Length: 126
Image (tube, rainbow, N blue to C red):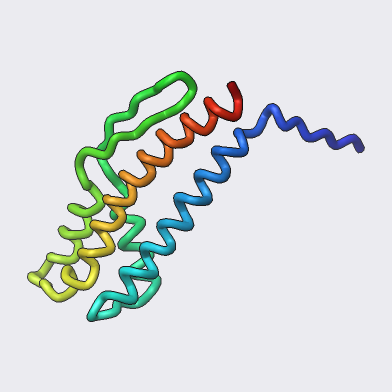
């Protein structure tokens, strides 16, 4: 049995590093918001709320081989707001609102890191 690994088929190293930085930042943000919240929801519900907050309506642009997503509308925030405010439960919405906004705002960090990745790739792979 012959196993060959072709590194040309995989993404650039900078892509992997930027992706790890993005998700580590997302985890740190989740941890910080959870610690500073007065009313602490269950951890798994906070994780779900922040991931729902990641759903956005965005404008997708292709620049060379890079895909840039500019977030426009916070769809996940609105979905979570609709779910939590059903049957007039304002307390539940207050518990998860910060997590939903964090999910939307982290998308701007993803935009910044994708632009940074273009710069890093142009320096490394010129």
